[in-house]
Length: 530
Image (cartoon, rainbow, N blue to C red; front, side, top):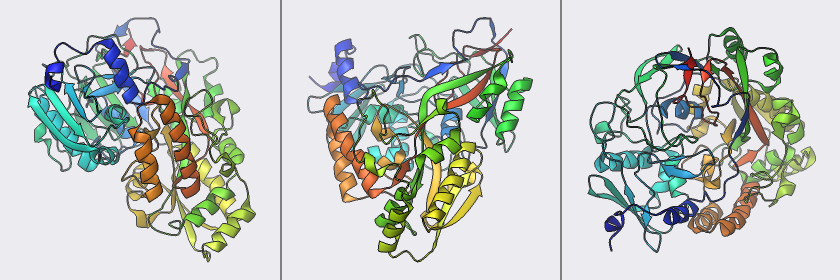
């Protein structure tokens, strides 16, 4: 029986479970929990209302494949959709795909059925040719796509509504890679091409209308949207554009975001300083949104060029850091952060103590010795950071101080977030930059440095071997064990330094009904109370 024939009838639930295991998502770390804002909020939503949404800054692009920036993903996930997505428990489920893939026994051949009758914003129907062109564009442009490209032998369409992939071997993270809403595998018309996007044509519940630099990105309800029938569940299930318009407004100053939320100017304000939580006490018009766990801040080290291309130098930087001071400066309130070596929290199958002794060393003498062994002569370590994520800036300030204490000369470069995102792709311009990642159940997804083509250029024989072993394993317990070896390698080769884990704070107007907190905030199924 061919894979195509196996699509009739649709896969049974038992098969679906096995494919979830293939995706590595039989090992959820737990859904983000929230307080203060819930989809269960009472009241009637106005279907014609609009929402003003305060973001941390200006997106450097609206091409969802051109950047792994959370901000780009947050906005454009309303316009573009993916074959698969995550439900509230971080399980991979279909979105534009009609069902889970049918897989051959050796794991190399997958057939993905597509939903029929799904319309792009230009009125044309999505067919397999569009999906193939989109995935090929993603594999050429996006860091995660480039990683997947190394696994794909062929990609073709046996008919208008089926996609067939041939892999070079079983590849456990595939479906999670296709589902991630950052630097994502957005499906767009085949005519889009590989160049800079001139039109933003997706299948999502909102269509792009206008972008005014430093003012807003305006999206409007797509009346021909083809919603799924299943109940809404995380990013999955039925999506309804209850709000007529979404206006994403760049508000780089966090205090301005807070004041705007308090005054009713914004229906939602993203990424707020956690010490501002008390501002919401006794304020019935606005609710705090705490997402826990949210993610981890980390410092990316440039392994391909500059003063930190030397491994001993990177180990010296790692030895100098005191994570207690860094995380306290970044988040202050212990309810919002933890200091821990493991990339994954206790209770996760991926929790590991591998090379934990290399974390939080606070050893400037060791740092100085390692730098001396590498031949360091006092050149400046260029530390790149943005103030738009305020905790990034606080982290950079403390890291700079700790590196100076260990004898490094530090050049702290403060730029806006869009500039940082541009500069980090040019390896000659920086040595360290500060960023953060959402905590995801599939370790290959975060941070992007574990894949190919991400800023920092991490590539070594040991990395390739470790990731090859991890990615070929579909069995959850064996994958968890293998992950410990990857974590140990990260502490050895130091392409990035995980600083701790944190919960995030946002604010939501009491009048905004149906909002469900997830790490990349979305506003379908949300409305403003009448």
